[in-house]
Amino acid sequence: MKNFFRRLLAGLAVIMFLFLALSSFGSGASLDEVQNQIMQTNKKLTETKQREKSVLGTLVKTQQELEQIDTNLDNLSNKIGNTEQQIATINTQINQTESELEALKTQIGGHQDLLNNRLKAIYIHGYQSWLEFLFNVKDFSEFVSRFQMVSRFASVDLNIIQKLQAQQNLIIEKKKEIVQKQQELTDQKTLFVGLKDQNKKALDQKKAITQVKQQELEIIQGSRGELEKALDELEQTSKQVEAEIRAYQEKNQTILGTGKYIWPVHGRIAQNFGWRMHPILRKREYHTGIDIAAEYGTPIMAADSGIVIFAGFNGGYGKMLLIDHGSGFSTLYGHTSVLLVDKGQTVVKGQIVAKIGTTGLSTGPHLHFEIRKNGTPVNPLDYL
Image (cartoon, rainbow, N blue to C red; front, side, top):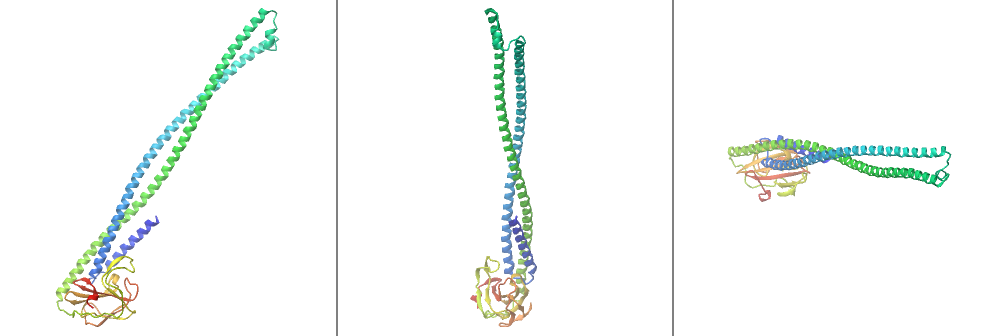
């Protein structure tokens, strides 16, 4: 989220810079400055389109993940529902088993009561035990009769009790199996519920990501529109500047310059003509002139005679002069502190036209000096 807002602020800053730069371009704007802004805007527009493509890709991927999570949630809900039905069936089986056990207990209790009643009957007739009942007889024939009766009763009772006990054991084992199945189903349901909760959290996270990315996409698309608008305006400005330069040169065919240039200020060359790393923007760019370091307020001289075609503030150049010398040559003086001539004024070689400063994109007092041939910057050291 922090990275998103950093990118947002950076993008807005670039757009504000572009429009501030556009507002500074006038009829005397530097063609190179406009073309440089076009290049920067094109680069930023390309980056914005790439970012837009990346965000769209993320949104598509996130949407696919959301659909998969929805499918997972539906499957888990079905599994949980099926498991709950199985648990309900198991609970019914457990209740039935418990009912069967209660019925068996009742049957066993009934047979115990029957046996107790028989014992009670023997006791009522004066016999303290089965042995007394068997042996307290008058003759062997009565013993045999009583023995057969006791055996018959004992056999029937034993058979019934054994069957009931066997049935009871089967039901107990069945109940154990059912209870074990119930536990397995309960554990399975717990697992499914946990997975469902995880998927819900993932769904919420993906929805949050989607919301952020959609907001970012709206901002990027808005920035893209502003950049495209800025690019159109820059291209129109470039055409306007080119037209004004051509019109001026066609109107002013008088050659004022000598074609031989003097150093506009005495000082040390701090930056040469050509490719360099910009000291402020921290990016590689083509330096269209030379930077001559000098003390603040040092006088700046016209490198050759000519007519001032621009005098004022111009974006990164700060306070700037542009002097046309005829024959397609012109000189540019940037970052000055004071301008001592006006647009349309004729100047002569060596005339003080400005003073050293540090306006515009500058790291310290110096003169940015350019020589242009037909509007294209050339290396000043080839002419000084």
